[in-house]
Length: 348
Image 1 (cartoon, rainbow, N blue to C red):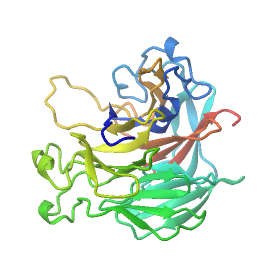
Image 2: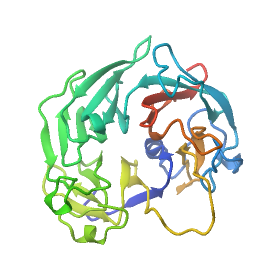
Image 3: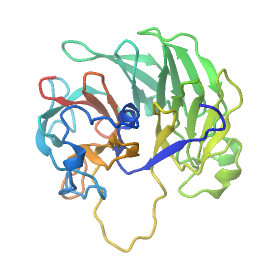
Image 4: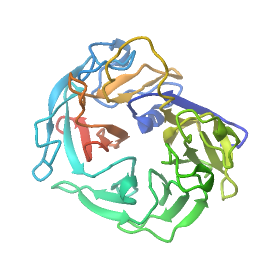
């Protein structure tokens, strides 16, 4: 993407967004939702999913309650109690792996799923197998690794203070190269240990430019606009390297970045908290949403999987990221339950 073409699209949300599904569906002619989902043109808003109300306009018609399948050995809390989720009719959801603090994810060229664990300072590799995935630590000793992105066989990892690239060699990584360093986090002297949104996300454009989200210091932080590097922004490193420059400003906390086929950069933003609102509303239920791209425009929000919240507002899971696989399955990370789910049409 040329540096002067600053096309950034945001989805403001309190739910997980199937960002890579958005990217895969972007096109002027439109593209279908994942196989087996109801036609969005005939889907309307329905009853709330999982206890609390669904976000305004979220389409939940066509969902059915189904048991969360838990393979042997994966039944530690919260799956020591039978759990049920809302999924598209004809689909199933299963605990595919247990990964404590699972955050963002990316498929590697060899088909393994990589998952970041900021709290543990590591990235794990989940290699599919006939008896479930084999989990190994791909890299450790990092500083709050969060965003993951591939460009060919090169893996980009966004830590809280830097972005580094690694040659991906299957079960190991090659020598890292710094893409951008000295990003702000709680250790930055001017912040005095206070940084509410230290986790970074990363994406790589088709021209090789690298994009990294830098969250705001706090809920509302005017000083972020004058900081160097700027916070509450998305920075861009030009192809081949160079100084990181602001690409988009006023992005409070872009969580997850994705590049659409038209070159536009997408992010999901959880905007400011504690805005006075006169109505007493129960907590919104966490869910995974899919937004179809229709006739060159973003379609309405549709629930892909929900049911993580009980009627009393308590939650047994907190979905974070959703990554589609070419075979039609969707893999969802959950940092609350410490799990990776596989959501797929029955029989796949």
